[in-house]
Image (cartoon, rainbow, N blue to C red; front, side, top):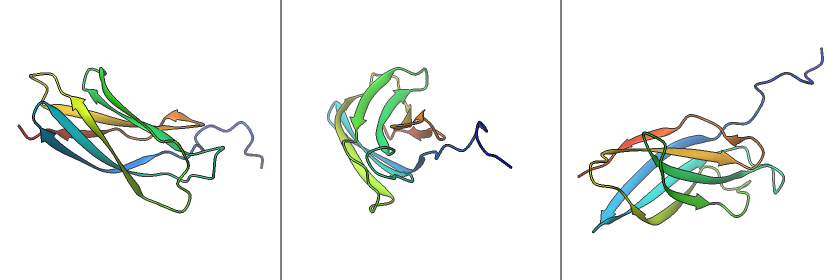
Length: 110
C-alpha cells in the first residue's frame, strides 16, 4: 500500500495552554505549544491572538525550531484588546502546513 497522495498526515500543532495577564491597557499572552519540529525544514513558526471574528490583535513569530524543547512556551506583550472583547482565540502556524490544529479560546479576566 502506498501513502503517496493521501491527505491528513500533517503534524498539527497542539496549543496546550494560554495565559493572559493585563497591564493597564495592554495584555501579555504566554502560549504553550507542542509540535513535532524536525528542524529548519518543518517547525511551529508562530501564533496569533485574534478576536472571535478573526481580527488579528497580535502575532508572535517563532524564529527557530524547538526539536528538543517540547512543549515550549513563548510570550507576546503589548497586545491591545478593544473594549467589549471578552474572549480571544489563539491560532498556531507551522512552517510547512500553515494554520493547523485546533484553536484555543480564552475568556479574558476583566
